[in-house]
Length: 233
Ligand SMILES: C[S@@+](CC[C@H](N)C(=O)[O-])C[C@H]1O[C@@H](n2cnc3c(N)ncnc32)[C@H](O)[C@@H]1O
Image (tube, rainbow, N blue to C red; front, side, top):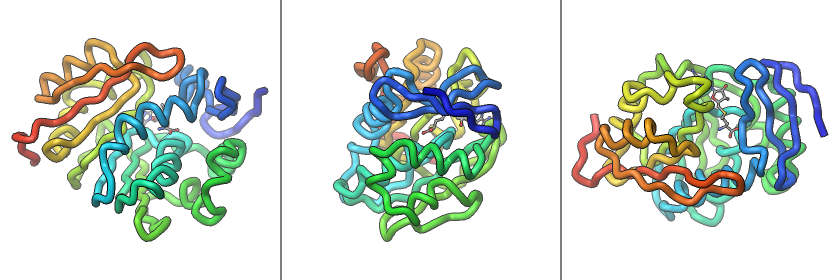
């Protein structure tokens, strides 16, 4: 099945777990794995990232808001986990409001679990903090990661840029440093990419890097943790 979306030349396509992703013609990439968009995001960002926290106050930073899938999955999973979350996501090329809504609506396994008004919060409204519920504040910021200067500290980073082959600058040690510097001691960084160059950059920044089994169609993903003796800026 193929549905055409307009902004940024994206197309909605089905993936192997029955959920949807977008293809981005400009970058020649999909926003998630075609082996399963929801199952990939749950495996990496929820299971290896969010689930390290329960009944805590946490700040999450996401690089690459895309369709908002990671944000929505975080919101849903957190109903069980009971954290108070400030979720800050950055995006240089936001997709159209209508495409967001269509993406969320097509992914019924997501949209059925989020009330209509809250679902809209994930799709519409940039550059202001929205209180989607008592324990979930969402701040979607339009900014280029290469120019982004974080002003908060974070407990968890979801690094979900397009691949190093397509956008090597996003994965540069210099770019990673500015967010790792803002990760609290014991904080987590998770990403789908387990390339040697990414592992080495994270190690150079003092992170303990763990190569973890990947979701369907992917051998490994990365979970990295900051040392408890580290400083933050
Ligand atoms: C793999 S997709 C993210 C998928 C997303 N996390 C989701 O749940 O749908 C990568 C995202 O990075 C964004 N991006 C590309 N270049 C960027 C940049 N320089 N700064 C910030 N975001 C960028 C893309 O527009 C795209 O939305």
